[in-house]
Length: 448
Image 1 (cartoon, rainbow, N blue to C red):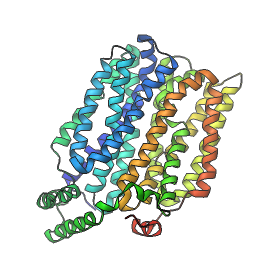
Image 2 (cartoon, rainbow, N blue to C red; image 1 turned 120 degrees about the vertical axis):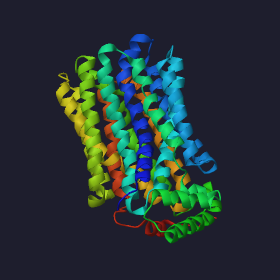
Image 3 (cartoon, rainbow, N blue to C red; image 1 turned 90 degrees about the vertical axis):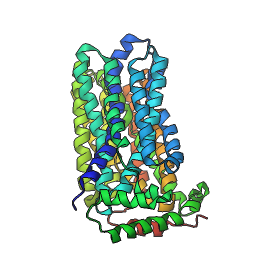
């Protein structure tokens, strides 16, 4: 179907928050080698500063879950952009590790809240026929943001301008702020607040091909769904016998996604290259850019194959490939030769398997499996699991790396992926080609 220009602009704008997410995740990798020449950095302080983003994101997810229905998706995203601008400026101006850590905590709050609000905003704006592709744009832009941050780091590395690297995040954040100020609110939220006339006007602007009759029918449908929802979404509903397995599956899958070590690789790529014996910061950053490029390319591949191959075989295959790749990397680090090219090849294979499987599938499963009445809070639970384990892995990685060495560290990641193979084989359902309504009928339990 043809999308209206107003809707296309909103899709691009909401996806820009995914870019901010990815940019901040990746930019710290290029800045870390130079931060350590400015401040006194220990493995613990390095881990805490780097992990401040996922720690703040846990709080951001909770805030978004609480306030998205009170303030609206648009206002939450507006606040996210403002906080991101402030966090970027403070990061670039930091006079010590303490201020840098606090500024990155701010950035984490913005990233966590937008990781909830932006996909929700996109899903509520997009017509059903293109909703999957539209929401996937947010995930794709995360990988694009990571790649661009790596390129920025590479360009600024000769000048050792880590402050500029971190402060540059304010530019896309400012663009997002201007864009969201000029954007309409989600029609669903407008109906939720009893502002049906504004909802009709927004739908007509976003979908100009809809007739007034179709628009009225859609508004009535939204109102009917809302009337069915409010009192149902209690936290106790997640303990219901037929819902609890979904909660456990989603949260464990996100734990395993992070315990595969992906964000240790994203945040600490140059450090890993150094451990592998690749000489010089510039060579390490060049290799890091290659990893970022592969991450984007394989995420596009994932979008192309997930509805053909199915979720279950792709998830099992992803865990198998990631476990084998990480075990290969661990073995390379354990050998006396420690060949940097061989280690890099293993890292490339790991990124490929992760990006095509373990990266997108937990988010996709989360959006499909939770019943509609529990989706907002279910997404918050799963996202909190993701960010909490993200924090632990990113915080502990430099500490474990310094204490136990790279071989043991990557061996631990490989072991968790091996467990993931068994977990996916026993627990992962197949939802390819199954409607959301049919999925909900098989899982629905009393929630009152």
